[in-house]
Image (tube, rainbow, N blue to C red; front, side, top):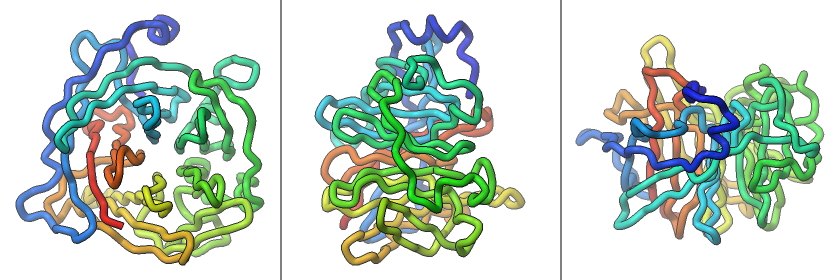
Length: 304
């Protein structure tokens, strides 16, 4: 995460302004077109000169449609409370309303990378569901970032030794009204096929072929689960972003889109996903506090 330029306590109480949104040419004229997937808009988030915080390091997002608030978590243990304005299929504005540190039940900020590395986010009623890496766990938080209680993990996800690495643990979480809280590690557990993914619930699991690291999940209007994967080739610097649709009732998975940088797509490290209204979703990239990367928000539409 980028440094803010002044102390965090002041940041948390400051009135925060919006970011500058610049056009991001996500798709070239030679892009691949998909039947059930469409990009409506893409913007790079550039903090304005008087911005009191930046958007760097956001790992996942969740939209509260009732209150019109967009929440985000970072791998540095921060909770972003934002407002996003969308009109005529365009992202018009994005601003940080409030910024909090994630805190334990005692009200004290989570300490150390092992405890603060938040990666997945969703909304359950008036509470936030957050999943973590390094020390794999899921917990419910209030909207001020204070932990309410931990959620019992499915048995395969409880031991750190079952994962393939400390940075490959619980990456995505989603709440399903019929199935409860579902979660998935970034890559398959040691005992599973490395080229596959498994989504775990309390008494259920869904298996699917993998096409990279699983980074986010979001519930669709019809109760299916939209799954985001991303892949990076360090040798050729190629990026791939894949969006698939899991039908929990049938246990089937349909690939909606595979965006590849070698096909003309201008991609970044997309890690966050949430449904806005109807069949429209917002996707966001984590820039890893790397000046060669960008924070990009994408408004997309799917057909189920």
